[in-house]
Length: 117
Image (cartoon, rainbow, N blue to C red; front, side):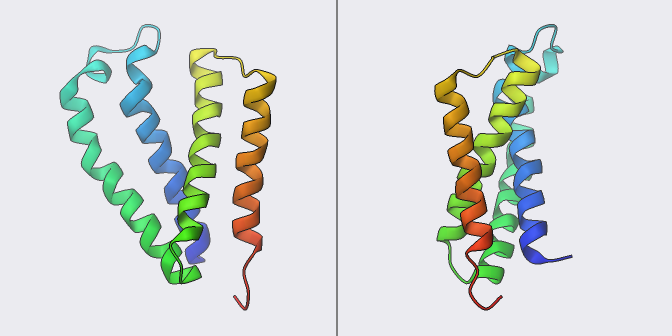
């Protein structure tokens, strides 16, 4: 599998886990372990390692760190928006929808702006 695709999938999965790590406490009827500091500390290391690998693979693909920074921001914003909307019923406003579209455009620019790859 292509390093770019693996990097992006890893970013999405890491952002999903990070969302639950930070926002799981606000879910209705969430289990107590999701609200515990032990859960936050335990899952922090694997999430950090996933981001580390995503950065490594992106750097190996692009040869620059800017690409992963911008892709990470864009994908993280999209994942956050989808999970907050679907699990916390936070309906996006027009301003939020525009920001999500901008985040998607940042990801598309980074993925399609590849010279000689």
